[in-house]
Structure formats: C-alpha cells, structure tokens
Image 1 (tube, helix red, strand yellow):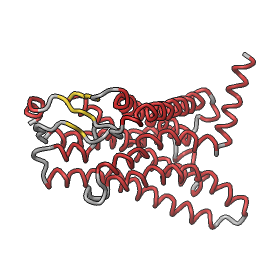
Image 2 (cartoon, rainbow, N blue to C red; image 1 turned 60 degrees about the vertical axis):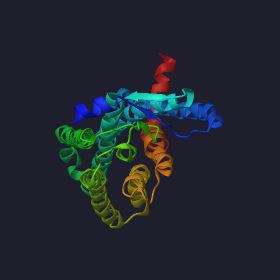
Image 3 (cartoon, rainbow, N blue to C red; image 1 turned 45 degrees about the vertical axis):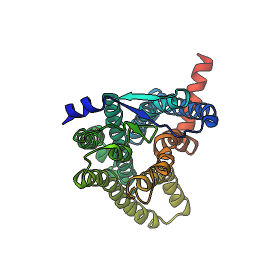
Image 4 (cartoon, rainbow, N blue to C red; image 1 turned 180 degrees about the horizontal axis):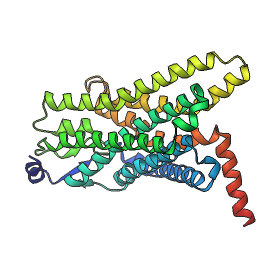
Length: 311
C-alpha cells in the first residue's frame, strides 16, 4: 500500500499558517525569532547542566533530556514552517512528509513521558527523601529514560504505520504548516473508522498514561506536603514542583485541546493556531520556566560566566 501511495502522490504542498501575503514577512521574522530563542534557551540549558557537576543529579538528568527533546522537536518543525513564509509553494516530498510526521510523533510522545518521569522523580524526592539516592540510582534513571524513548518510538511507529496504509489521490495540499495527523487524514481517499480509532487509541495512550502517572505522583506529593508542619517546609516543597506543574499544564493542556476533540468541533484552521502552543511555544518557554524559577540553574549560569570571564 505504501508503494501505491508513493506512485499516486509523490509530494505535498504545505499550506502554511496563513495565505495572506501581507503577513508573510512579519510572520517569518517573528517565528525566526521564536526559533532562535528556543535554540539558545535549550542548548544553553543543556550546556549548563553538562558543565556543572552540582547539576548532575536525577532532576537535571531528566531536564537535560527534556531540553534535548524540545530543541530537536522545534528543529524538525520550524525551519520547514519558515519556508512557507518566503516561498510561493512550500513543497515537501511524500517520504519527507512521512519522516517529519514520524519525528513529530516521536518527540511529542517522548516529551509526554519525560514529564511523567520528572513527576516520579519529584514524588520520590518529597515523599521518600531518605530513599531518594537509592531509588533514583543511575540505573533507575537510565531505565526510565529507556521507557521514555521506547514509548516515543512506539507512538511514532504506530501513527506513521497508520498513515502509510492510507492512499492519497489528486489533492496534495496539506492544510497545515507541517505534516500532522488530522490534515493528512482529511486528504486521504480511503481513511476509515479504523484509522481514526487507531489515532484516538494511540493519542490517548500518549496523553492519558502520562497524565494519570503525573496525577498519581502529585496526589502523593500533596498528601506529604500537607503533613509537613512548618510553613517554610511546605513552601520549599511546593517551589520544587512549581516549574514542573507549569510545564505539564502548558504541554498537556494544548495537546489535549488539539487532539482529544473531534475535527467537527475544532476546524483545521483553528487547529493550526492551537498546534502552535505545543510545537512552538512549549519548546521555547520550557527553558525559561525551569531557569528563571530555579536557584541551582541561576547559580550554574553565574559560575559558568565567571569561569569564562576569568579564564
């Protein structure tokens, strides 16, 4: 079936974010700026964690991987998106579209599960502090990370395999700035209830399982915090979770709004705008969320700058 697809449609045209010529130049520079902030923020955080030994603990091990995912995620999407602002036809080959779609799914699933792994880390740190070093051992961290990327591969393979069984006929204009699930299903000549069911099940696993894990973790965390007698202790415990809670709300809120609503409720044109939150803004804001509210990261930045100045 995949070979039939390739012979009927060899390339797609990405419609982009808007078809209004007057906005193209402004949007190009706006989203180029967003991309540069994303790259600098995530690579900067990766560098800080790598260079400062006091950040070589499980919490920042997962944050290092979150920044790596965000940097790769934005790089898989934004450069091609920028092309739609400066070219009359933003053409992508069938193979290129499927490849972009695979990595889109991989990074979304990986981010979902890395956020749940970070919630588990906070649960152990707050609820079982005396066992933290033993529980969150390097072996355990690597095992969790293997699970994160394993689920990323599962989600990407399931979704992409589902797309490869679709036939695309004469219309090859994707009403989006990237190759995403709903606009590709809309173009297909033979998409069926089974294809939609597969999409719903896989998306539910990718969003539902991490959300349940996060809610369970924070249920135990809140229970432990309320049992802390001192106000200072409760405040400190809350502060260690605040950045993660903001990041989780931002990512899962936008993802659930986009994918867990039927297309009849959320038209594709509105869906394009909604998808900006998890493809553009989440990778851009995560480094800011975790650095501006984090004393350890600020201290690492100060030490790194001092070493550069006085070296």
